[in-house]
Length: 189
Image 1 (cartoon, one colour):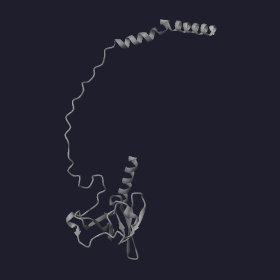
Image 2 (cartoon, rainbow, N blue to C red):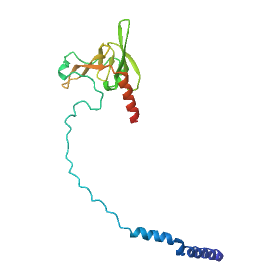
Image 3 (cartoon, one colour):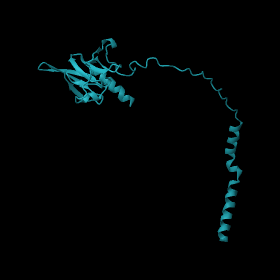
Image 4 (cartoon, rainbow, N blue to C red):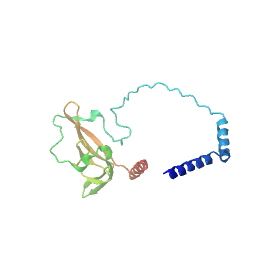
């Protein structure tokens, strides 16, 4: 045990002696002194900030600026009736799970005099829609299909406990616009 203490003590003093050689670190000491002797830099003053003024957004009831614009006729065009109410017992169709802003009319076909609109949902699936089909979250029933748009009537709450019919249009979106929208959304990811 005494031998181990003697060896450890000897090693300690040898290492201490090795560290005590100042000529080995003279260049380092010189560099440290040079850096310490340099003049200090100036710190920019703290900027003054203007007091925050609260802002009330007055257009909260309008369409969000980033939603896809959909041509909706004015409130006066809504048709109010006591007989208007959605058929809640009717089975829901697949496109009734999507908001109108998530749907795009991408084409139209005509076979044996029957027009069929091609509607793409936000998942990229294309559906065939005929006159009388339903789409959108507001019980929208397709009333007509033309080469450039699909017209439908939505049944929405009137705000006074009843329901009103609101005309809605889903325009044909050119493929170039859809491709640009898809590229922009891919670039954002």
